Length: 260
Length: 249
Image (cartoon, rainbow over all chains, first blue to last red):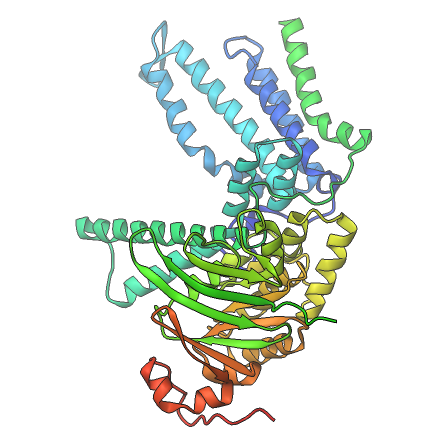
């Protein structure tokens, strides 16, 4: 399943010891969230919006450079954006209002601005999240979320996802091997039916595993909350370094609002 | 000086699942402190149902279970689960935390121990199963045999009165099997081992109990139980080809 040695989710992480890697996870999470908030609060129809997007881009690329995250890694991170791109490309065609001619197509002006804005904002936020994912191990992220008081239940669900992604992945892989060993090639309506049966079987197996894991947890005194280990304190400098990214973005936004 | 209470005392335990299927029909079992006992029986004999009663996961049938003198009741559950360490068959079910160290720490933290004490117990437990130095590794990086030994460490860290192992030798390669046997042999606790693996029972446990159709049908020295061919045959138990039981030297 392409899980490789490090596991499907751990593969997002690039080991390193840059200043960004050394930051505790929760200031980084706050920084990325704050950056995304600044980016989305930029008015799309303001004439200075493109300049602001360029400013944000510079800030996030600076952070990526500081973290040693290369352009290839950043571009791969953008793959999750594809559905947004499709939607953003649709907007100029379906939006109302004054229209402009581009290459013989009649497009809505406000649709263009909205679509472009959506695309830019999504791209910028995902770039920041990619830097976070590349410099923070999944379990450190969980620790960060726990520190930020995300509801216990959500943290536990995420934790199980990280732990069991590879287990379920290899189960799926074994089922595929078993299918193909009996001459299944896929394709067509019949193929879909077989795949649906596989998905069903995988669901049942995972559900049963969930029950067994729960039993094992109860057997060791689980009462509904995950006991957290010792947490490192974050000094003012750590917070300052992490929050430099959203602060830079906020400066860009402020400048635009005042000058525009 | 009075003798310590038995590590495990099961009296007239009967249990039916909510769907009406009755799994246990009055089980009696007494295991003294420090004993090594193999629980043998065919599939569907009620072995797993019995194990789940030992730490109070299943309750509500007839009879009584007590661990080192403490009855299993709703109120005593936290202490019962500290005293009874169950090692489940699939280590991937048992090891659910992102790293080995956090997983071994899960039980002690549930007991509310201080972080210093938790850290000390994690180190000791990993040491006892020959896995010191693995604390920071994610479980999926380890071999199956290593994961099973870590699963043993996760209950050792709770300093249990009795360790219950469900099919400990299943899916292990010969070296993994031997390594686990060495670990189990060196543990200073009472041991109850649920298994189909009769040579493993002979190697590790002086006493064997056969459970079938929800009742205890055989109980005695392992070499005698395994030499009783009609008893084994009556309960779908078979020695591997070429294996002959003899008293442990």
